[in-house]
Length: 96
Image (tube, rainbow, N blue to C red):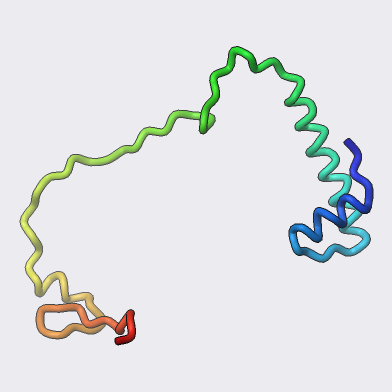
């Protein structure tokens, strides 16, 4: 499918981008090529292909949750930029 100049300019307007004349020509060719590739994909027989949300299975790798002794407060706070007693001192996030 060959896109004409008006269609490329319309797509650019929808994307809220300004294109130079050279960019309209270049993107027009590129978008036309992409649409041709989709047309090739449309011709494939996918009747026996089950629908899927991703191309490959994902496995979440996690370690076993094992309880451990806590670090001493002095070790934890040793890298704190600001501290107040045994607490981290941070800037206020919400105004009162």
